[in-house]
Length: 469
Image (tube, rainbow, N blue to C red):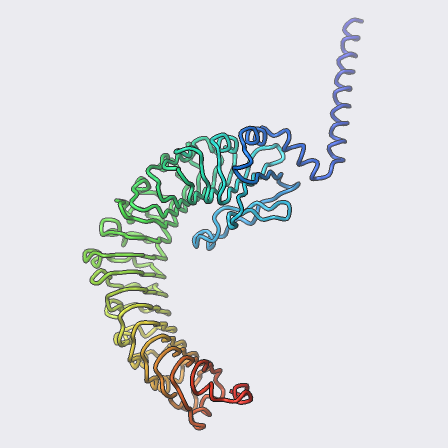
């Protein structure tokens, strides 16, 4: 009898609790998304801890709840993250976009519906106390951009879920501690006064590393990494051996020395290579890996340009501010389709005939006076030689396969007459001192789209003639 009474009371208590729970749930379900989010934020330890230490002068603070008042922006594509366009997903809430692109002093925290931080965006001219960093340790993504961190060490050691991290100009911070858990996949650091970074070796999933820190060797420890696929790094002061990163697919290297790239030919997966700044005769002996498809070379001093040859998969090559004659350094590139050069010393295009597979030649602002060598390029469709010193482009009449020509900003006094059967579709000869074009020559360009702005010839035309031109 006594046991039955106890059992009935127990069942009654459970029924009462269940009824109360259903009542609360019913009330919650009746709330609007904004009201639900407000309740979650109010109950969230993350929000409470941040607000407890936060001051109005730190910036404007925003909390959003995923699925109610806020959401993730699109996860940046590989192209965007590698071109520094975007690195972490933005936070979208209250019809606003928080992505580190504005000049407003804003701090946005996206919470899940359990009240935990999952995305953090801190924009320019804000201040962050240590308590803020501790409170958001659960986040998957974090962007700190132009922030004044109120401590010399940014300790992220307890950020066990962090996958993407971007630290851009965080003032006063000289030391960074990466997560102990080592789940970082993508890391971008632009920190001028950085002195040390810890736990780099624990980031065994790191596949993207972007660093513009100058005279810094803190990333030398990634030597031998099997996970890195994309690396953009300033190598001044570094002993990192790029050739040890066996799965690297693309590299952007600033100020590399011979010790950094002497074994780069080992990288079988490397498809794209960009080098910014070399000033040592020794680096000209570097051999590039066979599977490269694209090469960019910028700011290369005299005697420092390596030979670019015997690369069967190379499709595009670009030079800017290179003191050596680039056409003397390229050969045996059977699949090269495009070549670009600007601000290089290239009085003639002699040597371009060694690259018969070229479809596009773009040489600008090089002091070039002779382009006759392009006549030997049977596959050339685009010839772009603006901002040079050309006074003769008669070679284009010998190339009926050409489709597009840009000879603007040169010294042309006249145009050559095209021959029947040409395939030219467009020519731009703007900003040349051409005063007159005979009707016979002009007729040969009748089916060609022409640009002649800022030439005496074009300025002499009537309005009706310009429309017909």
